[in-house]
Amino acid sequence: MKLSNCGPLLKDPSYKRRCFCNLISAAALLCIISFVGSAFVTIDIKEKISAWGAANSMQTNQTNSKAKLNLQIAQSNLCKSQCNPAGSEPLPKGIITKTSNFEMQPLWDSPERKKISARRAANSVQTNQTNSKAKLNLQTTQSNLCKSQCKPAGSELLPKGIISQTSNFEMQPLWGSPETKGKTKPSKSLLAIPVGRKQKRVVSQIVEKFPSNNFTIMLFHYDGVVDEWSDLQWSDSALHISAINQTKWWFAKRFLHPDIVAEYNYIFLWDEDLEVENFHPLRYLSIIQREGLEISQPALDTAKSEVHYGITARRRKGDVHRRMYKFRGSGRCYKNSTAPPCTGWVEMMAPVFSRAAWRCTWHMIQNDLIHAWGLDMKLGYCAQGDRSKKVGVVDREYIVHKGISSLGGFDENKQNMDSPSGASQTKPSNFKKVVHHRSSTLKDRYAVRKQSYFELDLFRKRWQKAVTEDKCWIDPYPELSKNSTQ
Ligand SMILES: *[C@@H]1O[C@H](CO)[C@@H](O)[C@H](O)[C@H]1NC(C)=O
Ligand SMILES: *[C@@H]1O[C@H](CO)[C@@H](O)[C@H](O)[C@H]1NC(C)=O
Ligand SMILES: *[C@@H]1O[C@H](CO)[C@@H](O)[C@H](O)[C@H]1NC(C)=O
Ligand SMILES: *[C@@H]1O[C@H](CO)[C@@H](O)[C@H](O)[C@H]1NC(C)=O
Ligand SMILES: *[C@@H]1O[C@H](CO)[C@@H](O)[C@H](O)[C@H]1NC(C)=O
Image (cartoon, rainbow, N blue to C red; front, side, top):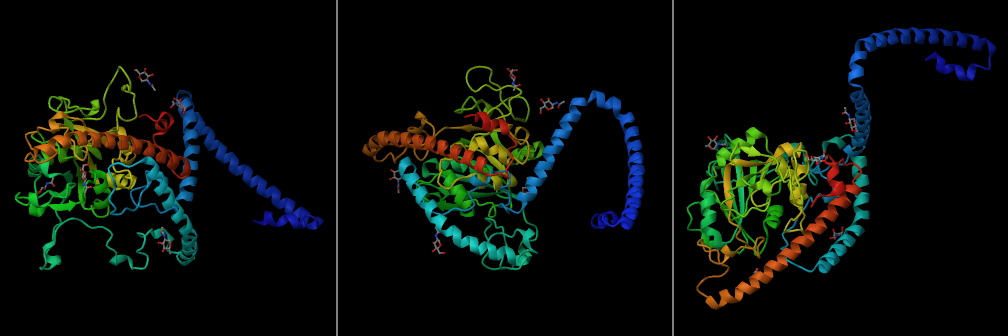
């Protein structure tokens, strides 16, 4: 400490000597310390020298990764204050879609029109940014002390204990004390299916497989028909949501907000055209829990299903698999492949999400991209760890994918028109309409397909932009962004 006083005093010779002395003694002390220190180090080195020789390359890699780590820490300190919505941390900021609305979306639309409306929205947001900036300044000065709390947006005015941040779909009695009633909260999962009346029988078979003690059922009626389901025994205990011509992802974004479904262990977000003869929900749950699968799907019975990707095909050995092999043609997959769809990937017709994985995935679903093409390839970012371990296909419990198209459909399949389950597109009572409808259905399908590809392209571009713009985000799968597979 005294040394620091020396500078200005050095001009005075009498002080000079004293300071010099101090310097000498300090230097001696430092010498002793460093000698003792180096003695320890030498011993240390002697002990480790042979090990170093062997693991030389590892050592250099360790220093590398240490530097990387330091960088990461520095970066994360800078980025900590961002207060991203809970669960969205694995995603680059620009792709996070925090809010939604109930505006219905057309199944197809000209890209130009969409772009224009998007630009308009961006403009109005721009003008409001200055306003909110002033507000932000006020807020930051106000809450220096409480900054780290990261309360849910809008709840800052309330004392913390009264904030009910999450909810559920459990129905409540009109009377009876809630305190005595809800003693032990049942541990439940959620099954959500978009349905049309034409698939009523198949859907009923699915729902009946899911024990009501363990699952809450939610139906999205995309054809607007709810009444025709009321004769089913389970109908009254299910939740029915109706919005005409809306897709699974439109519904999911609007009605499965992670705070609302926070109490469900797993979210089954399934299509309606699945056969569940060989599927047992509770056994499935116990397998994915044991295997640590955060995102999964039941395997497809290859004899009866439309199989689009090899990884979904059922294997006869074992309970689960997490990768596929393809040694020929395009899109090859080897043991060393690390990217979807070779590994870390499931198809979107029968996905099952853990609570945490869904919380992340919901943020990635875009409000306007209702067919959600491209989302599947990025799901691994929400896998709560290594996607090649946390994403998988369950072979032991498996389903049949009938490939019946709904809403203009994603699969072309002749089954559609004469399916025994009444999957024809119109009521058989009106034959003329049926004939007419067939061709218009094909046209619709084409339009939906086109729109889906358009969305795929848009989603990829958004992802790329989000990645380049978010300096706080570190890509855990960097090779993907380089040669962006599919
Ligand atoms: C060290 O790192 C380099 C590049 O990051 C890598 O190619 C090499 O295999 C690593 N060596 C060891 C022993 O991990
Ligand atoms: C912008 O702010 C004004 C006033 O605060 C509000 O009336 C308007 O709805 C806002 N627009 C958007 C797009 O948020
Ligand atoms: C299913 O529900 C029953 C009855 O409430 C319960 O005993 C059981 O633990 C539940 N199983 C799972 C996997 O949640
Ligand atoms: C819903 O879509 C079908 C098929 O594309 C179409 O015929 C029908 O008019 C649409 N309904 C509404 C209300 O838009
Ligand atoms: C992965 O394995 C295949 C075949 O075994 C090989 O051709 C390819 O070069 C390997 N890729 C990497 C990145 O190691």
